[in-house]
Image 1: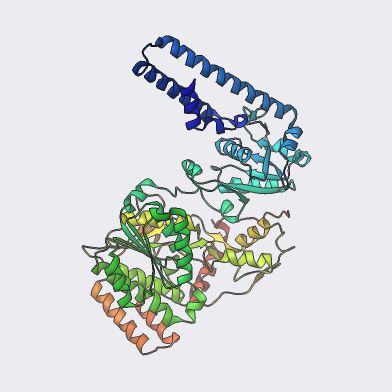
Image 2: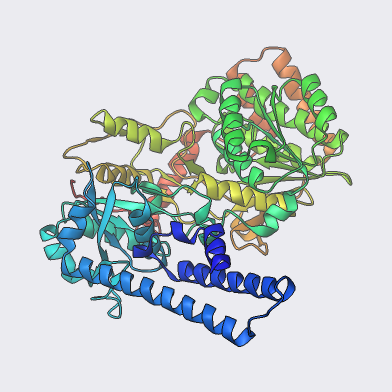
Length: 598
């Protein structure tokens, strides 16, 4: 009937690819036919002089719908059987230049979704031939015309006989160590192993770009991903004016991206480096358009008058202070700049925040602030104390402390990758070094969560998981690149850099750690310094800078201010002795090299 055809056209039922139709497509057709029937009945009752009996109308529409569904089911069944009986013919009919036959590991929801997406996409270069799964209920069945084979321990010895070039892992809930083991197993097949870059939130699949990419170090080293779309966190920032200083940096830019998702009233991006801010501004404009109210501000946090001018203009309700110098060796040779930018930049920004009515001020700190052995860590510890001393009735100040983030500017992973691309050697400062690592999105999300609870001038510490040996990280990256460590790519030890620690710490005293309602966020308990005492300390530092004190004098002054600030050589000597004593009981996981060349 005409009304049914009209509804099918409006709901785009005829644009569906019935060969790969799922339950949602059939439901859409049913809704279209029911809507068409309802429209017909309304027209019949309201506009026509002679009415068709309701029973007859319902029977006619029901019969038409059932016949249509039956024909679609029959067509789909025949095509699937054809694919099962003649898989080679199916792949040839879909043959395109550079077409890659793949096997997808995981016949769960994510694997099936990937199959559907690859089959329906005209631009995809991947053609799924097999799904591999260990579930005996799935083995031998077909899903979307793709045969399910398994279990993997039976498939692995013969997989190189199958007409596939690549293997894609689609296992969103698998723990990293199990994913690594699976990766190692499939690497032995000679096929290239990829990973489906699924979003954390299942419901966001329709909005985010899906990718099949090379497996990387983050996939194998870290815990289950946290939700990047925490509704409570987004609700807190929604409708607020939020400022991010150092917005062009690794953490600052990711904070800005996640804040943009929360639909703030205004997002203020502040940085002294115009190129990075411009790139971020253009990225957010492309993604959100006019839906995001955003201002990009070029300013230095060290410029007292300029910072006050910016705060007076925008009056942010929440501030994330991520602007800082973070490179340890460079700051050892540029102590005055480290103090000027890190300490006084934080001080000036905190004063402006309090003066112009900011409700929450969150300092992004580092694990290097704990018992510092270098100027960068010492200045960040003093930044924490500055923030703690500023607590007032109008502004809640807090600091968030975490370790290294993978992929950040100046981090070890990009350096290792560049050295591997150049053929080696991969350089590490000391084989004993361990570090805490976290991905940039995870660290940023936890910082945002902390911002929702910041109060009483506390220092929040993020759960970084277990520490990782840098030598193991280097071995794993070499293996992921398709080389054998120490055979294809050498690892060279070059010695500790000035101010560098063997081991980083997250808490000053573990027994002082207080839990929060979030299992990944803890509070370091301790007394906040008095405001007048901190002001006197900063005046002394300011005087030393004005007198152009050299690096030696500035380090001595900082050591008097911070009793926990000690020389790296002294700390590392004690740490090495302690490590030797506890070597038999060491809890640091050893990340064995994959040892397999592609």
